[in-house]
Length: 352
Ligand code: NAD
View (cartoon, helix red, strand yellow):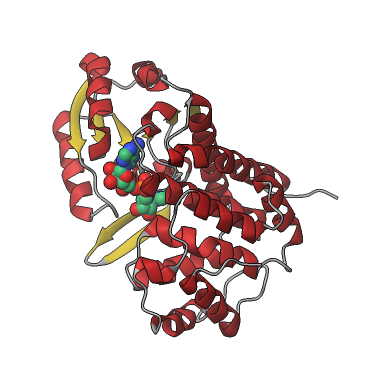
């Protein structure tokens, strides 16, 4: 018998090549008249065009949002909001630009319009994060969920393979863990499998430079689905390990996810057979873990922690930290198992 809870966030989605041109209509729909535009450096030209199109609704801009949302950047953004009496924030770029917009929404409750240019998926979630004094505070709050998301695949044209590959596989990690999450349900599983399927279909040609509108749209649609999966699913061993290994040893975020994902999937192979079938089906692969590893190789991503700068002697420490506090995972988490997982990820061995 079927029985489940599914929590959805009500964002308006506008999807398609060239759709960023509809930003002024979306701003009008929200009844906003004084807009702050935040962008990452790579999206400066897109922001210029958007600002011209906004006309009198444009109030101020912030360029060059940086990783990890430093508290001082949110504080100075709030001051700009105050000076210009802004009533809406537009974030054009990846998770960093949106992170500042979420910081503003958290403090002032302003509506956010997200225009993503990577596959990170933050635009679908109620998760915010602000860093200060060497640490990062995160939380969940419905106020930070964007009211409108414009997915325009044209914005991903300039995404180089070294960013696109790990960003896409990082997105898939959310769907992989959603498929065996403690709070999994049929709606979530359908979204997660579709996210893996479409991302895996579009990503290789995005990375080898041969992508046309269809492949770029597929990959961005996959990012949308994977972000949607992240917004409601509880995460398991993969996210725990990435948090510990990446955070403790300062490894790059998306690349660490890309290396660990095949091994975390392999770890759960016997305890989550339905999830494994769904992942393998979505990838068109024989096994879930092998399929993810092969995709990472195909898109030219790094597949070994040693190549991300982890020292081999830190594997034991990482295994200790990651097994200190209990958490849900389909396969019970034990130190020897986690150590073996990290060892395979360190050397970049293909899971069988
Ligand atoms: P990012 O926004 O810092 O972008 C990474 C780099 O790519 C930047 O140098 C940026 O300028 C460049 N870039 C972005 N789009 C580009 C494009 N189309 N072409 C060329 N270059 C481009 O980071 P990200 O990878 O988008 O997101 C990762 C961050 O988002 C992390 O800090 C992570 O913690 C956060 N995140 C948050 C959530 C959430 O729910 N709150 C979810 C996922 C990720």
